[in-house]
Length: 551
Image 1 (cartoon, rainbow, N blue to C red):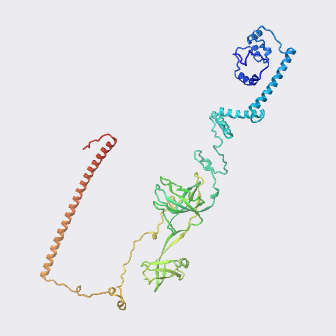
Image 2: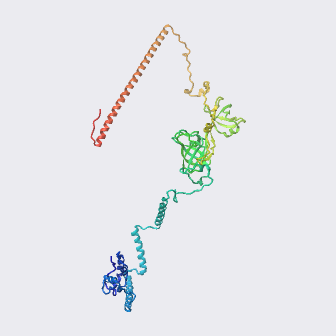
Image 3: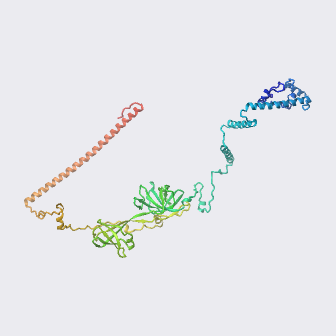
């Protein structure tokens, strides 16, 4: 393909202004359309790069084909050897062209630059503008610095993954997928029994290192078969911790915390345990170290508060017997064992079996005898009760479970007895005994006559004397026969009435069975009729047409 570089036949004389002005645009088009054929030799290629029109032979109007023929004959033309006239002409021509170009550039700048800026500054602005919009056209949306850096990092990761995938024998992890932790003084059991598939939680809890009493709201899990007992060691898992402790269960009745020996069946209760500080509201689950049942979780709940003291009380019932009685004052024995115990319960309320209330006053002697006053005079046979509540101490036991490989945990009393084959201690005082109460016979009430006179008439005792109870009835032969005949008639009448009642009862039972059978048959008929009705209604609603009932 031939070179397209403007017009080949146009004479190269003094250029006009219009032609000089369009030179840059034409040259751009020429550069864009510049192409060479593959079968050109060196001479033809050299000719294409000649820029002097006088040397090319175009001044005489000769075509490019003539020049090619001359080159083919082998004639050599010295391009450097030029005549003085030709050199002067070329120098003057070039000077004129330069001056014309400068004038045209100034005129173009004046025409095309309405802002009064220099040509260099306008070129810089134009190149900056072209650069921005050329990038937008080529790459679509413009990317900021963050996106560019992100793409570079992603390219780096992709290249790394591509290279590492070729090394299939290496188990590699990229940065950000793992954390290297060096832990010193690890136990031997942990290293020996370490399993990579088993997760190990690593963390620190700096703000929960102190120990205190914790009030928990707990409920036995519905699937756990047994209820929980106060004092049995249990493991509590809350947050990042697991620790073994001895819970004390209690129930709050808005006045005091009453201890419970066992947890309720289907309701919540409270538990006081000793352990580290825990955030209130945190949930927990409790279980035993040695699973004895199919379901492991024994209880669940939440943390209520952390406290340094929790007052839990248990019911205390003491009994005593009167030793000396003087009007409303009595000395009670066998309730306390020392004056110190009496001093602890001074002012406490006491009560007898008959309901007479009293109060503990002072100790008398060193055997636990004390003086008490009552509302009324009591009897020697009365039993005195003292109902109170005794504060129990919360057991402060905390055994953290740091490893599942070798755990030294506390066993319950039942587990120790089973392990050592110890029998359950048998206390005779703990056995229930039959209550034998002697029936007391009280003397009849004697109201003084002076008091009877002051009472109203309706409240006075009225005794009517009669001899009917003391009179004896003696019957003769006729009266005996009449009484015997009436007894026989009454006996026959009673027997007849008994048979009639039995017959009526039997008839009622038979009628009841008959009615039940009839009701069952009627119920089956109603069900069948209802079923047929709704089947037809359903078919009608679907548009399937009605169907007859099947008998």
